[in-house]
Image (cartoon, rainbow, N blue to C red):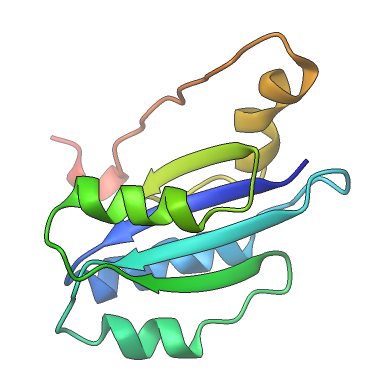
Length: 128
């Protein structure tokens, strides 16, 4: 099995850079090769340069360009490009925990779930 992480983005280079940093820290299970697909939905803010220089020791990385506007179009392009049987979706403003791949895919891999959803915690600087 292979897992594919899909992130759609448009003009969020600063936030995406932090998301990619958290992806670089992921612990990927040995039995689950994992790829990261970032779909650029025609950004014009430096996203393309960020993605051209992105490198990951723990993940196979691909940058997909989707010129048709809209997050659904971007996600569909990511799904079409994915090689994985397990699809993991997150946003360009999320910082994933180091064990995210295992926690999100574990029950799918054991056959006890067909889909899972994770929790959301507000960033401390956004809490009111």
